[in-house]
Length: 359
Image (tube, rainbow, N blue to C red; front, side, top):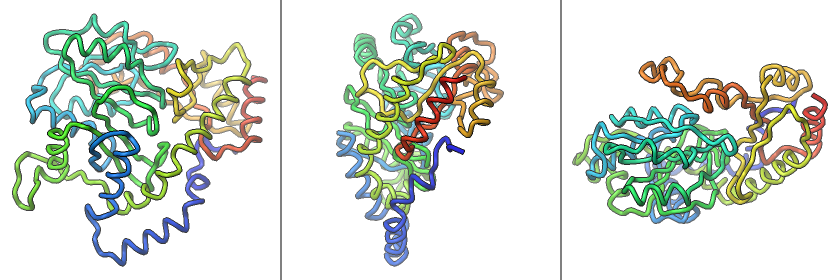
């Protein structure tokens, strides 16, 4: 069986380094916000071309804390509207609700699966204060158009980059990352980070993640406990230098999929610029998704659906169930993610392509 994502194989080359770091961690005796977190924050800020990196517990917390920090600074008020792509993972929407803000859904483009910039201006109101842009599946959203729209309407841009480690971003915005094990840069457990070049925002974020405190037992804000784990930071420090090479391996696999899969029943992804996609996921569409998924499984190929139910149709979000978002709903009914990682072999890719072509 070709696994959708073979985490064991992906992490095996780092095993000896992981064990050495674990031993050093135990011997050091400093388990929270130690030198490994500091090193990772410095390295990831530099890697992301940002001035500051704030390590947090997970990607969802990263989004929530960004929004709450902007509220603390008076840039957003509770109840304000935040534009969000309708077909994102539910975490993007949950973060907006957790910060006592109002999500406003915008349909994606069929071509890119990212938010359609041509639909944004029509839904802007006096209460629209921010847009949460999601670089879904690892593809950069159309930031030139989005930046221009938001600048003309004085709207804050926040980027959900949970699936976009290693992209070349456009604009000096604050970004949220997840280091869930399946990400291009994955930890061995939960982890997340925020990157920003806004010094005032960074100061508030460093405080909010640690009970709202900058000095022990002195609390300036109503904060939370969401700190990047020291051991996970140690593992990420090992893996970060290899991220660009692993992303290139993903692009190489994607190029083969794109050039060699030839089946009129299967819609391949479209990208604007190959440098604007790091292929966290390689997502195809077909009108007979369940049949294709079963066929692939019978032929030894594991696939995953990202995602079967759009946020506005989830039971948890009943207040949005009445919305009709036909493009989003069609996408969620048809998408299927093929195996994609830096450890796929040429033979595995060849088998996947041949199997899809014979469907």
